[in-house]
Length: 313
Ligand code: NAD
Ligand code: UDP
Image (cartoon, rainbow, N blue to C red; front, side, top):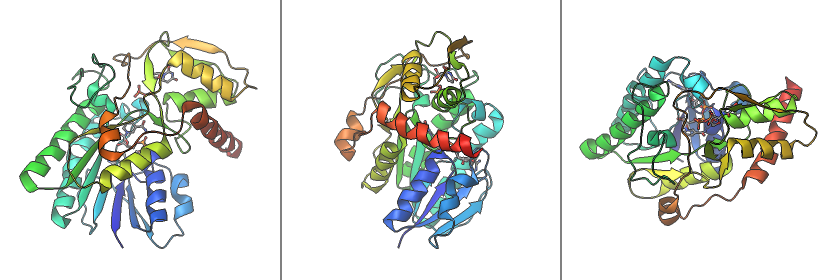
């Protein structure tokens, strides 16, 4: 039986991953500092004898014996990662050195969760893995974007210098149940606003685009990437269905027809990328992976989750 470490395991994506790995029969060590993670996300796993939870910060070294490591530890919402930018940089640099060092010592294979943010405000559309990106190194998003770029470089160099088995995926905007209702990302904001009949806050004119992947599709792609046999450089994982934020707001209102929310435009944050859409040819070719859940289906499932969450709160 394999032992698998999931850093950031009590966060949105990490909790889904822990669940899938347990279903497959693995031993799962979930490590989290609970900055944006929540115990509610993993409560249902706590009774499983193959599940173990460690409160730890990857910025500090740790000694464990594991066969595989999924490194997801890092706040992902702009509000969260800009709360303490230096800590965010440490997590993606010092933290990633600690994770890769751990992997080197116990000869574990590592999958690192990188991001479409390495492309910054992209001038190539849709984004292919060979595009080097357009990142403002001193802007408010740089603690996350540049941190993730250093993390990719660390992964590649540990592979070249120490023959570490590494896989890098670049995750495009992913949503679904267990995304913290207060985490400030667009889908959680729009749905909770619509359910509370509050104005839907569109940043700027709402013509900027994003491409939204449902969490189950993403986790399937992530696990396929880990299990394939080669360290083959970064692979985009995302859903190429591209929407403006105005279109997204309409889709959310369509999913919550009783909502009395109106649309409100508020200032656009600095350096907000204008367009984003993954080219997933590489994932399709190497992993045989494509997303299966379209935005309407995914939104309907996500709305049900937030309805229950708000009722509980
Ligand atoms: P999330 O904020 O819900 O989860 C991140 C988890 O990491 C949280 O549980 C948090 O407490 C934990 N964490 C943060 N810093 C840590 C540290 N120093 N030590 C230990 N734990 C720490 O976000 P998510 O959406 O689940 O994202 C998971 C990963 O996927 C992140 O690395 C993120 O950058 C990446 N990603 C996510 C998306 C997306 O759209 N969801 C897109 C691109 C990349
Ligand atoms: N956004 C918005 N209203 C919100 C939150 C976000 O219009 O309440 C916009 C934001 O400006 C960005 C897009 O939605 O253009 C996605 O934002 P998010 O924070 O979810 O992710 P990221 O910008 O990191 O892709």
